[in-house]
Length: 138
Image (cartoon, rainbow, N blue to C red; front, top):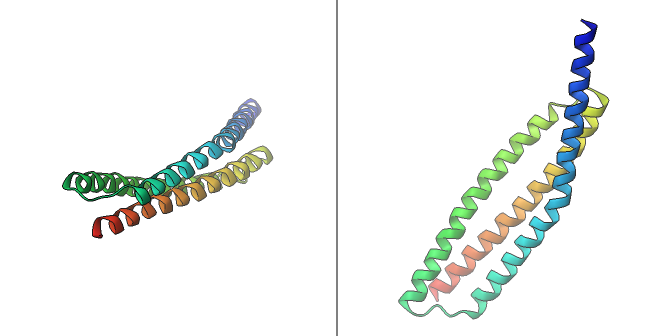
């Protein structure tokens, strides 16, 4: 039985290290995600401010872009729900061991940052849809 307990402890420690490594990857890659969304928002917003939508072809293209961003909004909302579910799972890891507590706290913090970026991406996407609606009305 003692051998089993030490095996379980080793598995827990290895899992905690894997979770910490995962959190580090999130922390490293997330700024790239944020920059990409800022660029998408800025470039799309700038394009919509200068591009006229006058012809039927322009309107069809604008409607297609609106559909793309509407689908994106839906997927981002799905991702937000999934990320919140993951956060609940990570929270359940607390109390297993000291190293798992530390790993869970770190991955929860990193995952909270993912949620923040998803919320920004959602706001950017809604902004694009609103701008398209304004352009299509005028």
